[in-house]
Image (cartoon, rainbow, N blue to C red):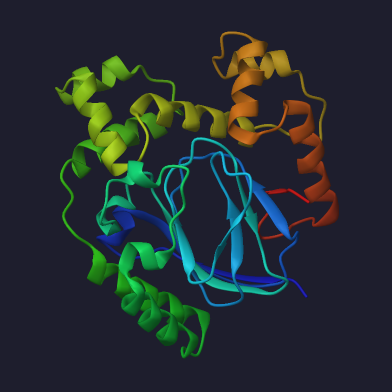
Length: 281
């Protein structure tokens, strides 16, 4: 048995905060997946057996029964699936999670929270009951969309961070933070404060994440790789700097990353989860 994956893009105003809402059900390709750090906050409402997450500097994985909320991570994190998984979730734009949080995003950086910790037990219990009573994935996603609309609130500094983050994304992280501050008419200290409140990391860290993600996704693991050319093409000072960045964001050396990516492609060609997650077991 494979995995059923259904995805929709929400209408305005949610589309300015969210890339997509998704439904996932089935047998995961691996019991444990490692996700390299990327500018991609996430919310999962779990509808099956608990899953486990090991993030940040944690040695042991923690159990999540009702789901989880993950802000922009600074290092790779590990996701452990049950044998049969079922959930709905939200892939946010880097700034998109903040209007649904009761606290600054920095408080959750590399420290995933349960949905109960974010929205409260009565709210998540009611939402999970409604979702499990729905007839089809599309209906479930409509229910999730309605729940998000009810939770949406005004967030100070959101427009500034959205505009600035969009420039970082459009340049693949190849933009000087000083130029962003001049264009926005604010100090670097003020911009960093707003970024940490809304995204969880500084503009410089977000730019590094975009540059690394763009570089990594462009690697063709089926062909010979000249790592010196990859590093130079991505604007890294030298190959050693690139290797250090690679280990920081993935926990792997570049060579080991290719081996693990090749394993996924070999074991599960064309799988809906292929692209960013890596087998961790």
